[in-house]
Amino acid sequence: MKRISNEINQLLQRGVDAHISLGVTGLSRAGKTAFITSVTNQLLYSSTHKAMPLLTAQSQGRLLGARQVTQSNILTPTFGYNAAIESLSLEPPIWPKPTTDVGAIKLALRYTPKKRTKKLMGSTATLYVDIVDYPGEWLLDLPLLELSFEQWSDSQYQRLDDTKQALANDWIHEVANLDPDLPCDDQVFNETANTFRDYLHQCKDHGYHYVQPGRFVLPGEYAGAPILDFFPLPKSAFSNKTVKKSARYVLEQRFEEYKKEIVKPFFKHYFAQFNRQIVLVDLLGSLNQGKHAFVDMQFALEQIIKSFKFGKHSLINRLFSPKTDKLLFATTKIDHVTPEQQKNVDKLLQTLIAPVWQYASFEHVELKTMSVSSIQATEYGLVTDSNGKSPALRGRDMAYNAVTVYPGEVPDNLPHADYWAKAGFEFSPFAPKQYSKLEPLGHIRIDAALEYLLGDKLW
Ligand SMILES: Nc1nc2c(ncn2[C@@H]2O[C@H](COP(=O)(O)OP(=O)(O)O)[C@@H](O)[C@H]2O)c(=O)[nH]1
Ligand SMILES: [Mg+2]
Image (tube, rainbow, N blue to C red; front, side, top):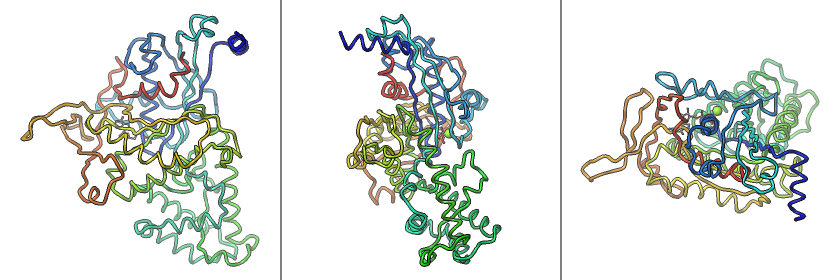
């Protein structure tokens, strides 16, 4: 009785309506825009369509509907839901334009509560959900907070594999021509900074994801600002004491400013504020790009997982106190594989995540993995060939030609050398289906993702 009266007291104070903040992240092209577009779309159609049977509030007929309202943080650009829907409705349809900055959308979900305490307060309740899209690349900046400029410089040289070495030639050469102990001409300094940023962009183009500092490739509001003008120095540059006004001095200052003005505020104003987070992973895309991209994605994912390490002694917990209590890692674009392969995809993601998850200490954070398709672009069917009936996918390629394909097998564990040698899986992009606005977008397990992320708040 006492517990109930406490709950009623709380409800009386803040009303039966509740608020939750959901962070959506993933490396570029992982499918964040598609995910938020689909989630918004499914929820906006929830009053007229029952396309989310795995969302309990809907299957029980308690989800009454949703509408878009002004987001809580009015300084954040609004996520372009309408623009995304317009581009999917074009003839022929095109995938929504990629975004490179943070974006937010807020939805008000109206539902019939089942919880006794909430029911006492009224026949309907509202859950406000702020959904925030932010680049996973920004999470890769967290380790910088624990590094000095010298240590960071060293790490940049250490991580040069053969492919990167070839891409890095220009900046290594330009940096070698610069005396770190003397003041540097502005123009030379800026050109070198430019060359270094170009190198990071090229790494991205070659399928590398672990690119630091993250804002150098996805600058958002800082595009063109001098705070992004710095570059690493070789070990030899650190043999003397720093001379005031020298190139090394300026670089050290910039590096510290970057941590203070960009990295910390992002973790404070965004990351630490989310109640729930989803990390989208384009596992199939990385498998397709080959071993170097896959290994690098695995490394980037490990770094991202570490930023969720909310144990008492974690860096992030010492600086801010994050609110996240549930975390979902989801493989996206699962409509790219035939259904019998989906369990392999799930196992592969678990294989990548479980070891890092176990060794880190995560207090009070619940974790789940799954695979989804936000905007389903293919249909599954069987084709008859010399082997009898085989699974296949039907869709349109990016030139809008109808295609029927069997993309191949996905390994259920970390791929071995022979897998890379025979390239067992062919992932070629599909055009989106024509969208009519008469019904919600086709999806796979977006309802299951929502059930995990929000379902408990709709009781
Ligand atoms: N077939 C399919 N392709 C998808 C799906 N989601 C995303 N994509 C593809 O992945 C690309 C990148 O997705 P996007 O949401 O823009 O990624 P973001 O950079 O993380 O926001 C899109 O342009 C689509 O080509 C999906 O559910 N199915
Ligand atoms: Mg995007």
